[in-house]
Length: 252
Image (cartoon, rainbow, N blue to C red; front, side):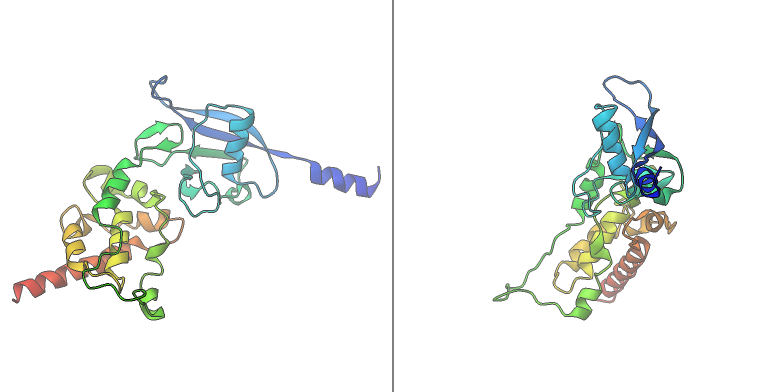
């Protein structure tokens, strides 16, 4: 056989990966389980693409979330091989294993298979007023911001609301009213924004026992974040600002 033909056959050769996927349908199942699938893979294949292979060719009942496929929306956040990851950007080759275990985000109610209930997460996110609030008259064109002012929120603004940090935080597991690292990071994002004029109002929301003082500085959130945001640092800054605000009040 010619060398050229051998190379073509090598390129066309397809390897396989074993996928162990978490399954649970509350309408049918009493307990959860992991189903195993043998999936042919191609170079450059992501975990999300592999799940589509299962859905399209082996089990059409598999449920999972996805949207942008570009690591921007956060919809496909999952627990993959023991780590918090976005399925769309996680290359099979980066996992270094022929056996891939995929589960839903831990410590969140499972709706079905890999789909979790995000309602508690977004309820707390809504509490911190995740939008610009102003009281002054609007300018003629726009509220300007210098590059230096914008730099203060560069990291915090990258949050894609995937809930990995929320799922990884031990305090959200045990303290159901805790706002959580993502909501507190978002609060910091607006407190640090030079255009926002609701700092006092927002600090009042985050300054209680369900807010910044509930954080135990464990750094699970930082480790879990697929965007490498330091939520703990944002929480520490909010703590200092709440203390400063209290001191100003007492000195009056």
